[in-house]
Picture 1 (cartoon, rainbow, N blue to C red):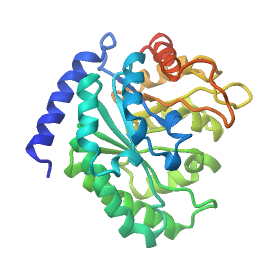
Picture 2 (picture 1 turned 30 degrees about the vertical axis):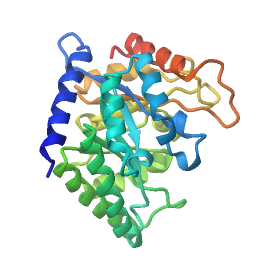
Picture 3 (picture 1 turned 90 degrees about the vertical axis):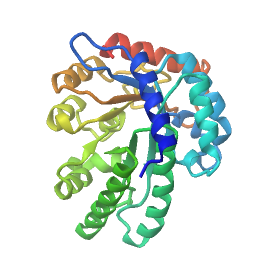
Length: 295
């Protein structure tokens, strides 16, 4: 169960969040946060711990509503007080964290459970409410027994999340949604009430039309990652500098009564040299989401 100090911090964070997030006319308050992958990409083990101060400072400057952490930071037992201090200092709530493990591999389940339990507990301690979960890429088509194992692990993690006031959503890379969404459909066949947290750019990369995806899965979607790409498939430096039709995606979200959370997740192609500071690209992206998507 969540300890009282954890619960109090979450309550205070929620009050701050709701005060900061604008409401659409006749619609729910939609939080638009950011994910720090672009910082992690060049760090050993993708561990963002050394640059947490910079991440919070940059994203506060950019005007986003919250920060989605990565599991790499939350594996450090001493990170909680540091994150809580940064969250208060920058008035920037922690949304939750992304998490990935080879859940299809039953031999790894004990290890994954121990790891995930620690990560989820720390999400709650820093005031987060969501876990964006990727099930792991087998580098081939998974067989039925592996999809069974994957679903079993997800059900267990969903239970741990519920104990901590956290909602698990299925976050996709390309491998979950390629081949007519084979992996995702296999999971949903086994967990019909699973929540989704699609990555819009990865949908496009897998040749899944995002507007159709939003309409097909409707009320399941509680989260989404936003990133843009150019016509040649290369990631753009900021949102609005690519060709993904986010105006249409914004309309589809409203048409399906989306009431969840959005997170800008920038990424650079290998060898790319930024033309501006990351904080400026996040700021441009935040302004684009507001102007074009209406959030």
